[in-house]
Image 1 (cartoon, rainbow, N blue to C red):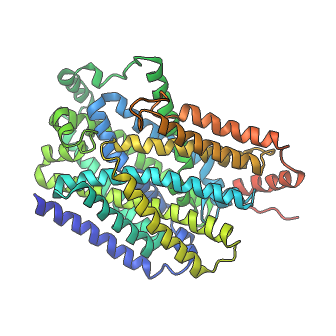
Image 2 (image 1 turned 180 degrees about the vertical axis):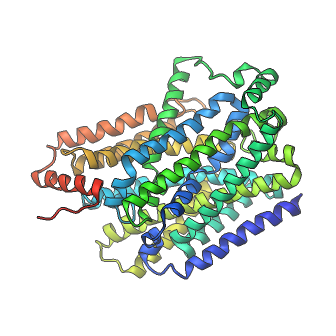
Image 3 (image 1 turned 90 degrees about the vertical axis):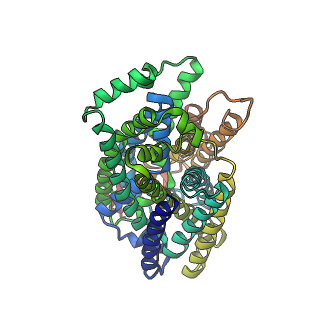
Length: 504
């Protein structure tokens, strides 16, 4: 078994390293490193977005959450899918028309001050780190199951690989690794779902009925909240999932790797279809794992249920299929962490180092060097944090990253485009309030503390409104926008929706 698994893992690593070597030959400028020179086509970017978004949280975490908790685990699938409507309708085109390399470029197109870039870089790095922890936790569990390599060693191996992809290949390598991963993941998910449905005569209703008969009604019915806090927690979770995607740095940066806004919109449509099919199949994986493998076996391998899908693959397809599904999950993790590292490194090198520390005077060579060192530093920090989070469900960990993104980034992005009175102080106040409140409440919740001070597991219900409120109060109390800032907003509004830059 170890030999089969090891061979598949090595094949995937070799393919991704070949892609990285090819990309490294073209990775000669900051534009190439940050956004692949804006040369990615619509279908390529659509596949890459899907590859970026369908992370270990989706493949491992949601299947495990459904297997252990029933329908309530499906909330993750619903939230992740609906979130792309927010991205498509409100964010994709304006971001492409206003941005250059990072999310901060978009905000700075209206408020071009150093404090904005510093705050946006801090937010990007924080969110990316939260998200990366989840991917590394999933990677550690997968490698330990298949190759019997210790969790700590597994995390370090993944960390080294993701650093190589970004430092050598930049966005071009990351994009093609994500495309390969998206194709493998869709194939693996569809194959596994077909194998599950074949046992129920390809009738999903029969699958639900048999799961209910074997495991109880609570597995297929949405659970009624037992307390007010439980109901608020479900609402808070779904708010984080629906609104968080539009603030995720590694997703937003993908819209800057295409040549124009039309291509950005096309790529979101392609990604939405792929993601929709994938998430509609997650109940087959989760319920199939619960029905065929059993909750006790799943929890014995990993308390959070992160290995439900690979164990289902083993039950239905034997050791080879277990190795294949696990290798797909491994490829998933490699692709997503590479995207996270490059978004965080770009924020540090472009927004903080080049525009704040060097006042926009850093050379191409200096920016490239800063981005590569930032990639190494961010990888090391994420590895250290992931070592202490091994018993968390990866989908739950990602929901916390979504909460921070929705609280810190989304209010500022939307108000930058749509509110004429919005000003610099409001943007900084809103971003810092959303960031500090979401992270602070997470640290005060039962996720971290044995005796929780804050009752909700996901604080989005509180921190998202706080982010919007802080934007409003920061703007109003500082006197609102100046006539020049209002004139700038008119220009931004036109450019955000048409791509046309006003003159005169």
